[in-house]
Length: 134
Ligand code: SF4
Ligand code: SF4
Image 1 (cartoon, rainbow, N blue to C red):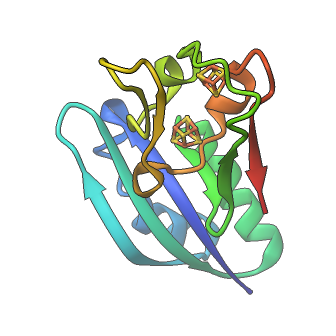
Image 2: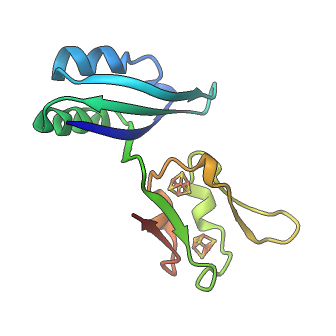
């Protein structure tokens, strides 16, 4: 079967040959759909993984053990503007700066194209204004 996943990896994981290890250790083929590495910050990749379902799950567990954030592609973050109190806590945990506070208006700004659906903002929000939109 095939799964399309988003990977977010940090500076310490940049040197790991992910696609080679997935093929060699898990018999999972990884087709890179999109990749963006920002030196000294985070790298983002969209991969299409092909393999046996158990091996795909084991491969994703291994990626997570390497400090890689893995999420299924296709999920999106939804922000309930009625609930949001603009406290900015979510901006502090967002690894890609998809969430920022406008310095002039102090309103929360969400740049969807930067979001890698790592879900860290969901637990950071004190008023449960952020959810996964499946
Ligand atoms: S899920 Fe939240 S914390 Fe993660 S990248 Fe998207 S907006 Fe940022
Ligand atoms: S943590 Fe929640 S309430 Fe605070 S700015 Fe983010 S979405 Fe709004």
